Length: 163
Image (cartoon, rainbow, N blue to C red):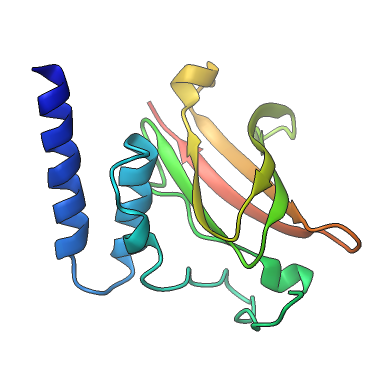
C-alpha cells in the first residue's frame, strides 16, 4: 500500500508542476520536487526556461566551448531562509566536473554538497542542515564547474538556515 501512495504522490506532484503557467516559480518548484522525489518525472519542467543569471551576470552565449562565466548558472536557494531542506538549482552549458562546498559564517568548510561529473542541463543540490548536524545560521555555498583546460566557473550563494 505504501508504494501505491508514493506513486500517487509522485503523479500528483508531476501534475502540479505541469499545471503551473510559465513563470519564474516553475523551475524552483520543479527543483524542489526533483530533490524530494528524484524519479518523479519533472525534469522537463526544469528545462522550460533558463535560470535567471545572478545580478550583474551577462546572459550565457551559446557556443561549442562556453566561457567560464557561461558554463555555470546558479539560481537562488529555495526556500531561503529555510527551516529544513533547501535546494540550490544550477545549470551547466556542457558536461563539467562540479564541486559544491558549504561554508559557515566563520569561513569553515562544513559540508561537501557535490563532487563529480555532471552532464549539461539542470540539476539541484540538496542542503539538509539536520542531516549534516548543522546549527541555524548563515551559510555560503561555493560552487565550481570545470571542463578542464581553463579557469573554472565559480558561483557563490548565501543560504540562511533557521530552526
